[in-house]
Structure formats: structure tokens, C-alpha cells
Amino acid sequence: MDDEREAAGVPKWPVVGVVLAVLWLFVRGVAPGETVEATVRTVLGEFLIGLAVGLPTAFALRRYYLPRVPLGREIRVLPYAALYVLVFVRELLTANVDVAYRVLAPSMPIRPDVVAIPLRVESDAAITTIANSITLTPGTLTMDHDATTNTLYVHAIAARDRDSLVDPIRTWEDYALVIFEGRDPNVEIPREPPGVSVDDRGDPVDEGGEEDGR
Image 1 (cartoon, one colour):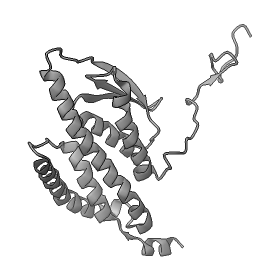
Image 2 (image 1 turned 120 degrees about the horizontal axis):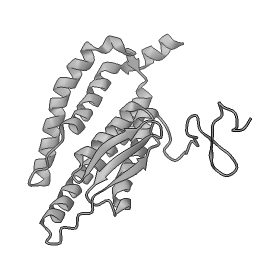
Image 3 (image 1 turned 135 degrees about the horizontal axis):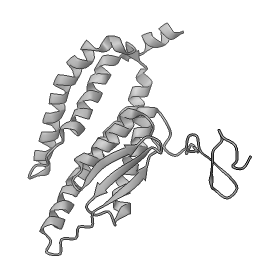
């Protein structure tokens, strides 16, 4: 049965190469041009560079992962990957305009602060992609990730406007849940902090020890 599934799939290394090219855009960063057309040309140019590096790399390392991948899943994920990139480009452009306004405005409406954003994604690839997307967007910077609580700490120059900061991150996360983990973003999975329980009053309880005085 496993052999039949592998035969029904497509070679995985080209898929990995394309993914590496997309990740290259986030790692490299794309400086917006003077016009939309110039920005699109820059994005396409960097993507082609990513393909030139990613495809040979994926081919050379193809023995380290499954040789084939189910075609159906990859086709289902592609629209979400495209939407992720489109949302990122939109946020990149609007953030550049917003930061320029705040720098040039006489009142300098800058209210920096650090915002904690709990995540639903769990895979390293998804967390890293979202964290890099935040850092590459002008005006925000991913400072740290708490693996225990799965929380990103984001520095923003306009942290008081929390909704405008969090909304695009939640949109990226919805797409990342589908792309990297194959999960429905509309389905919540309840979780408790690892190794921590609470009593009737909500106070932490050490399950491994005995109560004081006994």
C-alpha cells in the first residue's frame, strides 16, 4: 500500500525547491520600488534567484526525505501559499507607507511597546515563517519565542493599535495552519500548559509533590 501511495505522488524535491524559493523571499527581504510594477519585478527577480538556489539544493538533498509527495495535498495547499504571499506583500507595502508617515509627521505618532501574541501553529517551519514575516514588515520586529507557552513577543512602533498589529499575523497563521500542518484554522484545539494544573481557586498545583504540612 505504501509503495502504491508513493507511486501515485509526484517527486518531492521540486516541491521542496519551490518552498525554499518562497522562504528565500522572506529571508532575503524585498525592498519596495517606486511603483507597484517595480516592486513586482523585484519580487519576481528574487523568486527566480530563490529557484536557482533552491531547486539544486533540494535535488542534492533529496535522499533525506520521502522521494514522492501526494499530489492532491500540494494542489490543495498552493492557493493558501499564494494568499500568504499576497497578504505579506500587501502588508509590506502598507507598512512602508505607515512608517514613512510616522517618521515625517510633525507630531511623530510613535508609541513603541512589546506585544505578546500566543500562536496556534506548532511546527518549527510555521513559527519561523510567521516570525520572519513580522520582522520583514517595517515597524514590527519579532524579539523572542517562548516555546513553553508558544508565544511570540513582537516589538511594534505603534503597539497601542493592537488590532491592526495582530490581524495580519492571525491571517498569516490561518494560512500557515493549512500549509505546514494541514489543519483547519476554524477548528480550535483546547490545550493546557504542559505540566501545570490548577485547583478550584485557579492556583497552580504541583502534581508531583505532596501538600505542605503532610
